Image 1 (cartoon, helix red, strand yellow):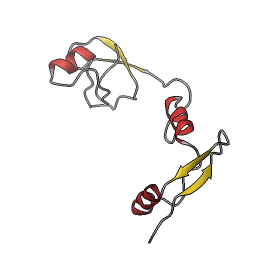
Image 2 (cartoon, rainbow, N blue to C red; image 1 turned 90 degrees about the vertical axis):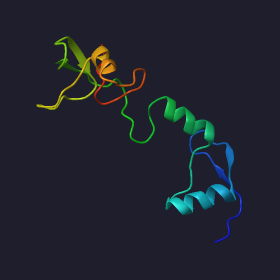
Image 3 (cartoon, helix red, strand yellow; image 1 turned 120 degrees about the vertical axis):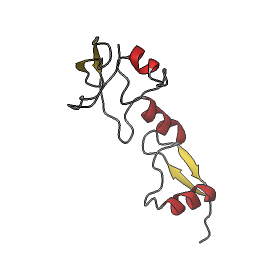
Length: 109
């Protein structure tokens, strides 16, 4: 299938933007059913504001828990599962975890 560049109007800001033949081929290869409806700037704004697909608006809930290694009280951004260990930031790092990156087993101090 051969694609040609097309101009699309952003549904957010009303500016026109180019949906290139290469982008169209990529969308077809990935099986995407719809063309983009927002320009690059508006897509970026939605992502950075937390309104993109899969994002939740507002603050995320924190759950109080106790570190399985040192017993320190802490909070985590996920509901701990009974029987599965969770660690505070320090204990996680001591166990070889990468600090500075989010991980489901990394507790917020």
